[in-house]
Structures are given as structure tokens and as C-alpha cells.
Amino acid sequence: MTTRPAADTGPSAASETADHGDAFTLPACPASVSEARHRLCRHLSATPSTLSLRDDATLILSELVTNALIHTDSAQITCHFHTTARTLYLAVTDHGNAPTTPHLPDQVRHPETPEHGRGLLLVDTLAHTWGTTSHPRDGHTVWALLTADECS
Image (cartoon, rainbow, N blue to C red; front, side):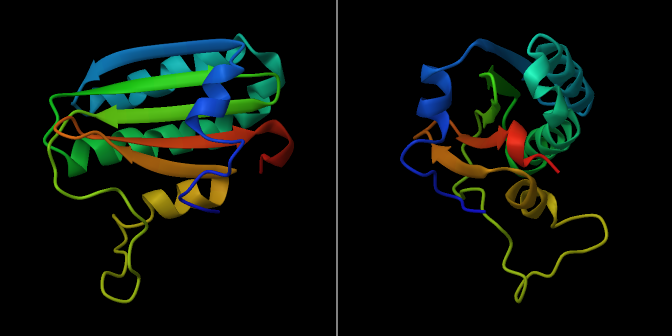
């Protein structure tokens, strides 16, 4: 949908009303993608009303973690999950110093290849809203908000 949150969505709204949350740091290595997915599934099982989001959420989380591994020089990543009765907030923070900000690809100048270029497009399609936050000298956070009534 959009890369900018509406006034009542995004990181602050989700964390203010969080019924259940989790945050953890993982090494920036390929095995961390499956570890993050496993922890998300365990997190969602504690909030049955958001179980319908599991497939979309695990795909989004996989994309966000993979992007943090591939596109940054970070040695670790931090994942955050917050659920309310009907929403799930996911965030992945890299701790790299890359000068760019995560963004949707420019399909004219950089068309996707069979292996790359669709991650944030999937996030954009599956999430209610998503966005990025830059942290000077300490990486970026890419977050997504999913709502149970809009899952695919």
C-alpha cells in the first residue's frame, strides 16, 4: 500500500496497544531467517486471533530479514513483534551503516530478476501499511503492520 504510516498506524500505534510482544537479536547469517520465522510462529500461537496472519507474516518477515542480511554490512539484526487482538506489527532493524534507505525498486531502471527484486513489493502487497526508519550511524528499521481482517 504505502511506505508511510497513517496517523493511527505504524510502530507507535502498535506498541502502545500491544497485548503481547517479543524482541530479540540474531546474528546476520542465513540461519537467522528460519530462526526468526520460528520465533514469529511461536509468538503468534500466543495470540490465537492473529493466527490467520501467519502465512503472510512469515513471508514478510523472511523478506525483511533477508534484505537486512543481503543489503547491509550489519553483524546482527533485531526483530520486534507486537500483537493486539486484530493486528501484528513486525520490525527488523539492521545495525549497518549503508547510505541507502530501503525502498520499492524502480521497475524501469532496475527490473527484477528471477532471484531478486520482489521482496518489498511482496511486503507492499501483503501488509496493511509498512515503512522505514533510519537511525543515524546505526542502520535502518523496516516495519510492517498486518490486520487480521485484511489477511489474504
